[in-house]
Image 1: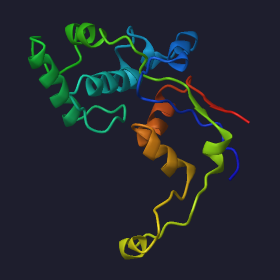
Image 2 (image 1 turned 90 degrees about the vertical axis):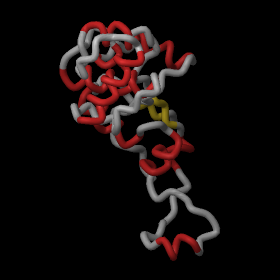
Image 3 (image 1 turned 180 degrees about the vertical axis):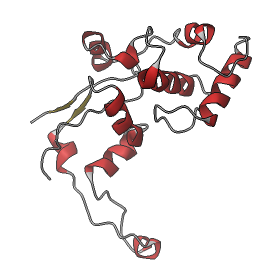
Length: 167
């Protein structure tokens, strides 16, 4: 498999690691607590709510009823005025989590190389395989990285977080 095109991806988890600390050198709108408007702010709110155990639904940088319910639940649990909106008091409370929302993701040559296999679409055929594998790099990373499907959304919203492919 060829090296992927320069996609922009991110882990939606802020781990304490050299990679996570290096994010300070790569400022991104979604990592900036001052970002309170637009898609980057919605993405930030969704990730921070999810980390706080208030699931906002799919992390997709879109407003929706699941996000509103998560905000309302978070506000109620924290004793904040319940507005169902990302108001100033809610941002202050959520921004107590200072770990980066998006961090660079390094893909190794092994990640890119696979192995990848043809996976049948029919469940019956899958049941006869000795093991289920991955057909694509996306599937493989989707298994290993939280919210991989949402990362293309993150790329559109906050394209300053690059993938590094190690040779």
